[in-house]
Image: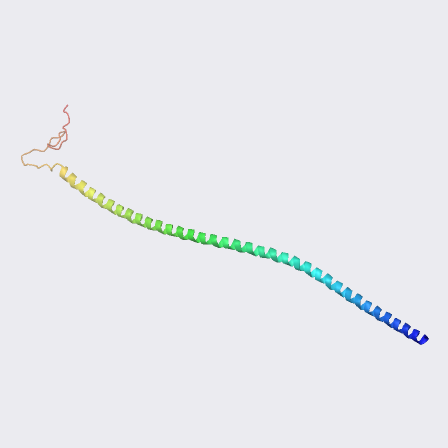
Length: 159
């Protein structure tokens, strides 16, 4: 019996030692799982933070894309306005060239008309002027103080 009791005690001690080892291993595994769970929790929180940041960045990108689309549309409008202004400017330049050409033609015509008026005026004066007096050998020259006959100059009154 003592031998059996010693054997039982030995088995009980061995069992107790194995249970303690297994408990220690289980505790280590439990601590490892808790550390892993804590790291997963931290990772999950970081992931949520990153998801939020990604969402904000994506919204910022979409906002920038909308702004870029508006800027491109405005650039297109400005390009059309510039082209229209250029077309109007070219039309005004053509109008100005036409007006200038017409003005130059008017100036030339005016110069021609003035020359013609001058010629006609000279011609008319020569037609309106009395013919030069013809002197006959019998006629005597005017006396002092008298106008020449036919000159239209009145004779001065005699004292």
